[in-house]
Image (cartoon, rainbow, N blue to C red; front, side, top):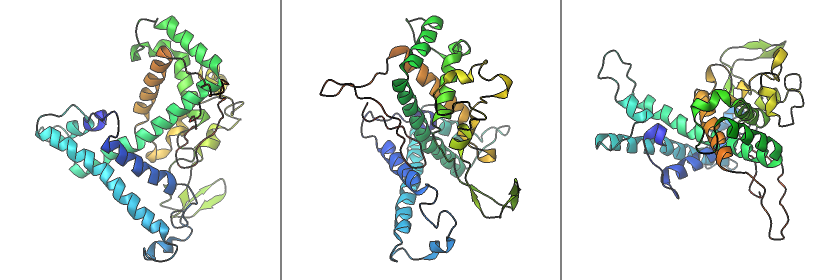
Amino acid sequence: MSITYGIDVLPMNDPYLKLVRESMHGMAVGGVPGKYLVASNAFPILKYIPTWFPGAGFKRAAKKWGAITRQSVRVPFEEAKRMIATGKSQASYVSKLLSLGGDPSEISYSEDAIRDTAGSIFNAGSQTTVASLGTFALAMLLHPEIQERAQLEIDSVVGCDRLPTFDDKPALSYITALVKEVLRWNPPVPLGIPHFVAVEDEYRGYRIPAGSIVLGNSWAILHDDALYPAPLEFRPERFLAVGQAQGSNPDPISAFGYGRRACPGKFMAMDQLWITVVSILAAFDITTAVGDDGKVIEPTFKISSGVFGYADISRV
């Protein structure tokens, strides 16, 4: 919220975060491939049935989710504009772009474009980043030896009297490899975002008619044992130089989508994940919880269903 709008959120019950959570819940549920026949292009004629018609619950849900999504994009943008007008704004994506236009050498954008791209930054980025951090926590619980190796690297490079910074990144190769393995092991959007085929195409002898919806199965690509040996195992060392020798274990760019519709925020996302992961490991040990009976609660690799791949760590 700060980077995008210059808004500092409340520590609890923040109204902007509440809007985003509700909006992303609609996307997570409604975006599951095959859940709604009208969305999967199986029966597009269903979009013409009235809202009151029996079985048209999907239309009522879409109307509700659409309204919430529009609010989640519009409300923080209007607040950012208000703060700019009153001179109380912080530097942000929105304040920077709204200030363009006075200098002919700079490119100016419409308010609609600024508002909608700002909504994409926060709505989409917040969910995927949180999902990846949950996967990181689960991986550390399941593999304490990997956590220890990462912490030893931090201690040897940074020491114990300060937090790591991006200046330390070139010397923290194992941390970088760990972040890449988090994205590969459990990609935050396992089936990617559906792509619309504008013109007829062909792939390996398969005809893809114009108007088709194509899903890039990121999970399958990132678990292809021809590319990633022992793909179900969490192995950060696969992304070290020795692990990427002879073309194996390529960087997991598939986690960010494909083509012109690949995630435009992937560089920011990687930096955000890296600095969060390295800071957590520098300051904390991630350990399993102990139940009321005094026994350790063993973590399980359980991922939520939906568009986003959340690791279930509610009992650890």
